[in-house]
Image (tube, rainbow, N blue to C red; front, side):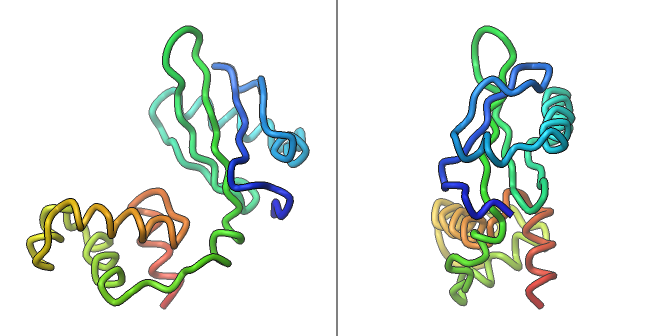
Length: 147
């Protein structure tokens, strides 16, 4: 994976998926094959067909930048490094994660668990960070893999 990447590693792409800029370590990690995959990801993101991708064990989150020409920022995280971080969920976080994976909304989780919706949102953010996931689908997959 990308043991040389920092937590703030990123790549900047134009609307055609060509790399315009990036952190030194991200650019060093980017091979020609990976650049082709990222170009496809940019095209998918531009058609609203996905914003989160996994390439060679690296989680890439794409954000379209506002103003001017179409440009995408891809924030990179090493999924293995994420897993090495604190991945133990508290009992409450585990319950909330299972509720979210079952399809409950944050409001429904809050009502079920007896706390404010903002608290449910805070738990969800912590769960996503600890598990290194960026969507409900990834959350479900992560919980399934942990069993």
